[in-house]
Every structure is written in C-alpha cells, then in structure tokens.
Length: 622
Ligand code: SFD
Ligand code: AMP
Image (tube, rainbow, N blue to C red; front, side, top):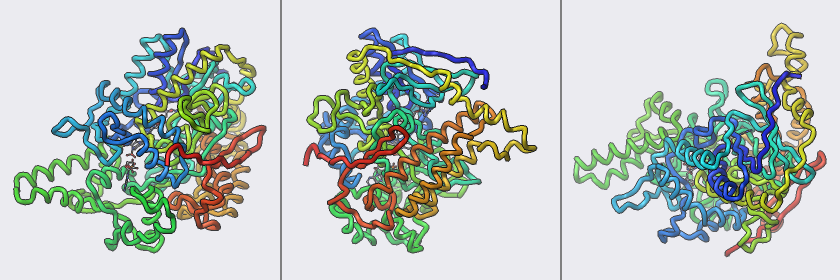
C-alpha cells in the first residue's frame, strides 16, 4: 500500500466543505461551540477564501425577502418556490430559510460586500427577489468572516483536504475520512456531528464544452457530487433526485441571464425573431395550474425555447441591443443624458459577467460582440444537480423545531442519519436559496448541530481505520502495480484512468438519462439500459487507477459523481410522468399526472440496495 502518514483529528463538530453553506455553519457553530466548551473543525478540499460556486464572484444576491422593509413576505416566497418547482417543494424548509436570509445579507453588507443602492439608499432590485451587488470578492468577504469567527474561538480550518466518505458508528455518524491534496497524508476525522456541505454536482452529464473547451460549465466543475455521495453512503434518505437544473445561459461561455431578463427586461427570440414565450404561450395550458401563473416556472421557460430549437428555429438569442436601447430611449430627448445612460448600461452589461463569469466577457470580446449593437446567442446547458438554485435534489432533512410540519424528527436540517446535517446544495426540496439562502441555511444547520452534540455528548466509536486508508489509497496501488505492463501507461487493461471513467459516465447520462445529445428526453427503456451500463461502470470503479495525488482526487470526484448519477437515473425511472419539461421529458409518459405523482420521490441506499417511496406534499399555507 502507498506509504502515507495517517493524521487523526478528533473534534466535536466536523464541517465538510467551505462554500456558502459551510461558511454560514462555521460562523454560527463557532459562536455556540465556544460558549459551550465544544470544538469545531472545517475541512475544505480547496482554499476556503476562493472555493465553491462563488469562487469567481457573483453579480447578484438572488434571495433577499426585504420583509423588515415591508417589501415581501416569507409566505409569498413559499408560493413562488413551490410554483417554480411545479408543486414539489417543502414549505417548511423554504420558510425557514426565507425568515433567516435577510439577516445573512445584512451581515454580508456589514462585512464589506458592496450592495447597489438607489438615491434613497434602498437596495437596487434586479427582480422581485434579487438584489444587485459588486460581487467579485463576495466569497473572500464571506470566508473572511467565517475565518475570523473560527480563529477567535481557537478552531481549525483545514484546507486542501478532500473528503472521500463518511465513517459510521451503527446508525450514527462518527466522522469522515479523506486525504491531503498537497502532501502524502491520509486523514481520519472523529466527530460527534458532521455537516455535509460540499456543494452540488457538475460534469455528471456530458457538457456542451468538449475538446475545445473541455471542463467549461456554468456551475463549477469542482462541485463533483461529494455531498450527495456522502449522504447516500451514510444511509440518509434522499429526495427529488430526479430534479436536475438546466439553466439557459449565454452560449459557450455560460454567462448567466438573470440580469438580462429581469434588470434589462430583455426578450429571448429564435433566429427569425419570434419570441417563444409569446408564440408558444398556448403550450403552457398543458402544464396548468403551474404553467399559468407568474413568474412562469424556469423549466417551462426552458421548454418553450426547446420547442423552437426542436422545430429547427434556432439558434436562440438574447436581444441585448434592443433591451439596452429601450432603456436608454427614455432619455432620447436629451442627447447628453442618452449617451451617458448608454455608457452606464454597457458598463453594467460587462460587469455582470466580469463579476461572475469572466469567460463570457472574453468570449464576447473574441467574437466582436457589442451587447448594445447586436444580439447574443443563448442555449440550454447540460444538467446540473444543485439543490440551492432552481433544481431540487438533495438530502431529506428535518423541518424547523418551532414550525408545525409533518417532516420533523428532532433537530432542524438533520438528515435521517443521527448527527448528520446538511444545507445549501446538499439539501433537497427547498430550492431558490442561492448564495444568501445557502449561507442562512448553513447558519441554522450549524447551530442545530451544536444542539445535537449537547444532547448527545459522546464520542462515537471509530473502527476500521486501516481498511478505510487502504480503500482511499487503492487507486494509487492499482496504478503502481500495473502501469509498467504496457508501453503507454494511458492504455492498460488492468485499470481505468479517472478521465476515461468520467467520459464513460457522461456518455451514459447524456445518451440514456436525457442530456444534451438526446435533447433532454428519456424513457423507461432508456433508463433501464442506462442502469445496465452504469452497473458495469460501478464494477470498474473498483479498478480506478491514479498515477499521483492529483489523479487520486480526480478518481474520487468521479466516484462521487457516479453515485449522484445512479440516484438520478433510478428516480427518473420510478416517477412515471413528465412533470418538469425543460429539465427532462419522459417520452413514454409525456404528461403530468397530479393524481398519482404530486408527491416527493425519496430513496435510500441500505444494505447494498436502493429503496424508493413516495412522500406526501403537505403545504404549510394555501
Ligand atoms: O447568476 C469539498 N449562484 C448564485 N447565487 C446568488 O445568490 N446570486 C447569483 O447571481 C447566482 N448565480 C450564480 C451562482 C453560482 C454560479 C457558479 C454562477 C452564478 C456562475 C448560486 C450560489 O453560488 C450557490 O447557491 C451557493 O454557492 C451554494 O452553496 P453551497 O455551500 O451549497 O456550495 P458551494 O458554495 O459551491 O461550496 C461547496 C464547497 O465544498 C467544497 N468541497 N470539500 C472537501 N471535500 C470534498 N470532497 C469537497 N467537494 C467540494 C468546495 O471546495 C467548496 O468549498 S446566477 O446563476 O443566478
Ligand atoms: P439566472 O441568471 O438564470 O440564474 O437567474 C437569476 C435569478 O433570476 C434567479 O432567481 C432566477 O430564478 C431569476 N430569473 C431568471 N430569468 C427569469 C425570468 N425570465 N423570469 C423570472 N425570473 C427569472
């Protein structure tokens, strides 16, 4: 076996991940742990200051209720989220995040995040729920506050350690294991409670960017399904594993569209200029009642555009020039004011991308696109698993302790596994939390985890460390034992390299589970065949080979993606209807079936087998 040092860390609360949810958990847990003589440890596979989905920055905060300012109510937010997910959302979780999210945003501002304000000092709204920020350094600011809170309490943040999986003591979480991505060190973390907050999953499906732009995606490629895999293998019940998110983005560099639709009030059209949201409006009747309210659910907005593409009317375009000129036209009687407004709008258009998707600004420049002069192509992306945006997949967690909800088993945001908590992209059926809601949910989960520890203040038993180490380092051993058998170590019948493994996984998902190549359509027969191929891939996962530490990380990332993929395929197969056209279409069950399927589909992986069940959707309010 590879000769790596074993490092043991014993703590009370282990926070796995260092993104928005984990930063929230750290701030809150550090406070409550210090007060109660407990210890918190945070582990991130990257550098905390610039890790996760907000690494590059963001240009908006997408969940800000503004209830203390009388702008909106949390009840309105519940209705908005439920509607956007075609009726399938946990009101209790959405409400809990909504009632805490404004305070996270106010903290961000206190910590130094510049939020746009108007002449009266009011936050500038992008849309009803979103506010504009100068957010290039958003993550740096939020991480710094968490670092300070942890340092003041005397707690450690361990960076560049990749979490591979959970350690269990019977039905209770006992910790996690992983390895350093910089040194030859295997890590065992022993903890009384664990927060799994390692983000969503990208590159489970084949991306549109292959070869020429391999790795480019809208959501970060380094969010590789670790939270889903961790919670599944710990035995936690999972929910909404069929709800992937397909965003429409500026084509090829994946620049977000929210500012264009909401702030600039832009139209999206097909090549001949038809506005699909208008020309295809009648289609929305087929998805009533969800298709008939405002805002129209994100998947249905996608779907209408996809119908145009299927009919050969593409490419689709964002009418950027029209939108900018429409706004500036208000100043048309004053040439100087008109020019000034045009300059401001151009600057805002570029900053939107420079704040969060720099590559889109580069692509515009490379393609001679002047947003004020010409329109720009948009397209539906490959699917992502992201419980915090407009998807819904994640762990099934307990509702808040003070709310009358049927989904409750003790500690808010605890999974069905004792002591295992999650938030952000890790929790399901509570979409539209985004960066701010993930932070607020993380804070809540961190506090609840400390509460759990105070009530269960014993160190669970950790055994089998040598076996875990052997399992963790096995890809290095497999490679070392076999790589000399062929003249080119890239080609070897005794192992599979992580890149090839990922390509195989992505091909299965793309072609059988409704990815880009199959125009987001699948069926029972396709899912079943996909699962046969997945089974063989799973067998080959035992033969993953890593030539170095870097490759070892890639092996485990793809292993994590594989579990997310399997949960997804199986859940699509179980739900015999099409509920989210525009995300995926079950071609053999092309209609929504509220009578049988207005339910959560949940699954659990137990004793080597998957179990599925339906759980009622119980609204908190009308
Ligand atoms: O334009 C391991 N998001 C947006 N949210 C907003 O509020 N406004 C926006 O403008 C947003 N837009 C947007 C967004 C994201 C991206 C990439 C773009 C644009 C281009 C969404 C938010 O970013 C998102 O909701 C939250 O960040 C989710 O938080 P969280 O904590 O669930 O995930 P994370 O922040 O990605 O952090 C994950 C962490 O886990 C670490 N990690 N650590 C150890 N071991 C492992 N095995 C690990 N695997 C992962 C990561 O390093 C990271 O620290 S727009 O589209 O709407
Ligand atoms: P996006 O850039 O697509 O991630 O969107 C940012 C925010 O704007 C999210 O809250 C979206 O749900 C919302 N949004 C984007 N486009 C639209 C639209 N056409 N109508 C309503 N809301 C939208």
